[in-house]
Image (tube, rainbow, N blue to C red):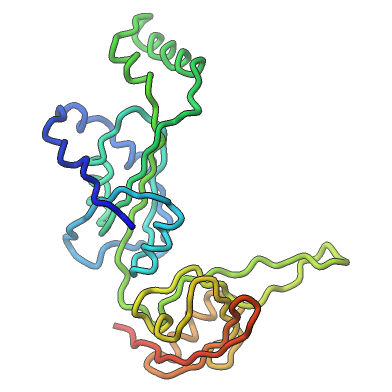
Amino acid sequence: MLKILLGLVLLGTLSFNVLAEENLYEKNYQAQNTGNLTSMQENPDTKIYAGNQKDEDNISMLENGYDMMGASGFEAGNIVPELALQHAKVIKADIVLVYSKYDSTKTAASKIQLIKEAAKKNGGEVEAKDIAANATQYQYYASYWGKLPTPLLGVHIIKLVPKKTDHSEQESESKGLKVLAVIKDSPAAKAGLIRGDVLTKIANVELNKPEELSSLVRKFQGQNIAIEYEREGNKAIATTQINNSN
């Protein structure tokens, strides 16, 4: 799934000046969790991994009980991964996934423009380091993750997008909540729920909004409940015991 970012072993060969530059991971960071999520550990041993496919990695992290705190994305020359780890430690993330790829969209004309801009900043002179820095550009992305407490149910869901009717521009109501990921070993996983299922009822109460699911799960914590759902158009019912809150 994920590989440890072995590039970190090369940090001893880097100059201090490289690490002392502005941290673009920090500068371009955007929080995405409304609950101000951080590690449950006061001083987390933050891990850094090389990501592979963002969408699949995101699902895998959700299934393993993590939630995304935020992300950074930008274009730049050579940037060491230590800077992503550095920012992850500041925001108390448990894991940071780092992605980078050569920016093949940079044309010769755009590179020339970058060199011109460097010359303008340096009073008309272009140094060798400016040409080298502008010659290769990469697209960088990092996602930051915090471990969640033991879930009451253990599903990540979204509201289904309403569909337009055939004879009207008005949108017809879409019922149910689509499962994006099921946390491993959670009550939802033990009930047999899988990614792609659509939850329609819990304890015989219809589900149309994410907050309805959260409210019902809190109400029935510690109890056995029935969950009605649809999978590939077929209706089904499962039972499970909701966890108690910590």
